Image 1 (spheres, rainbow, N blue to C red):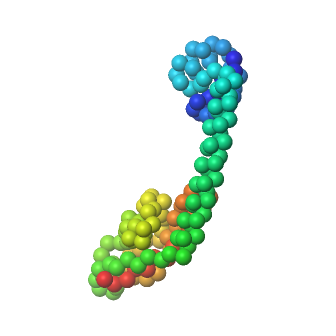
Image 2 (image 1 turned 180 degrees about the horizontal axis):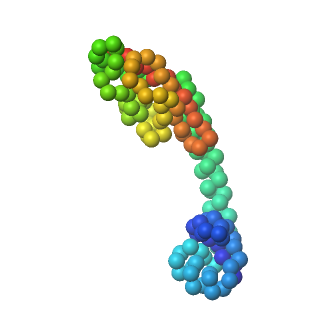
Image 3 (image 1 turned 90 degrees about the vertical axis):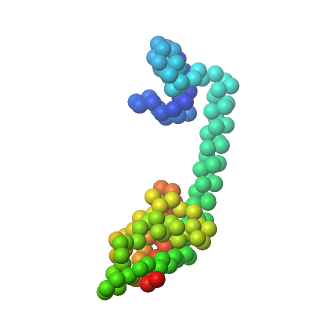
Length: 147
């Protein structure tokens, strides 16, 4: 029995794959669970169109991420903080603080995508890495100054 997988199935294939399975497995498990559909001519054409659309969306996403990375590489943020003795910060500067500073410049970045090379507990210049998509990352300069 030839089926088209609608979602990833362990030890069988990924979503969109065309697989050959035993009739009972397909008819009694995969199709009723919504994990697969019959591989008819119309369904095969539909899957091909969906794959093409997904590839185009992925290309656009990569292009947008590269544009954003170029924009971020030229960006630095200044975060004013309260300091005590010895120029030490009360608390520390977090990824949320950096995300808020970027938002003031109309750059929306999720704080979970920002990683710091080290904890920011004193005044100075630091580097933060922003993961846009898996292979595209950007580094920004973070200036921590006295309020």
